[in-house]
Image (tube, rainbow, N blue to C red):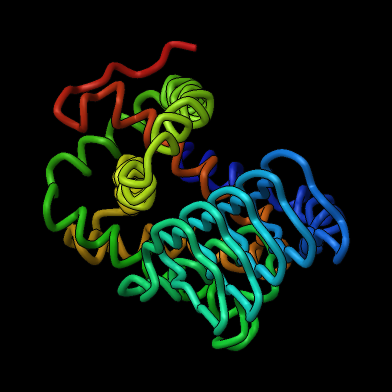
Length: 308
């Protein structure tokens, strides 16, 4: 019984922070290099769109924002999940790479390097939209009604949790038992693991950006890093379902669905108010399950109950 109240308490703890994040959150303004302006060095953003009307003496890079070039770029132009548009008269002396969003080239355009990723990858529009929703970029919502991306994300997480349960039914049940037996230890290990991953990401991405081939591996790497969080999230769903009386006990897939929905519905509501708060809450919960997966070696080991 106390495990159920602990899970409910975690969700309720996150709700009061929503107004704070909602007040801080706003759609990012584009970074503009004005006509006649010359920007020295590399120009990079995370979710802000980049518009080059003048000149950039270096690379132009955006992780989740679009890049539009009207002027001159004397380096590479790279966008990981956003689109790249080269307008008439644009000059790019380096390479042009769009990992997922595709490239639009008008005539006449002067290109001295390679052009990679003209056609968007399969599913790239959805990936770009989801990234933009997490960062609050309104331009990613043109092809879907406002807020619908949040529901799509929740539905995808639910489907992934069901798939993980079908593939590893005993392991996910073991992760749920470990979480119930050692909730504090799981939370601590999960938090530390997430912090270590965040600290390692800049160095790993720095290695990938040394070559265009490495940049193409960015999205598969992100997907691979999220798999343990999906497994941990599924373990929490199994832990929630295991606290119910035997009279309402469900088989693993249905148990996962019911347990996951208890977490997904509040996260969707929070994300509709503030995408940043929803993202942080989702990672906090998934990190808890990740910790349980680590201390139980993927649900294979029994865990003694915490004495603290």
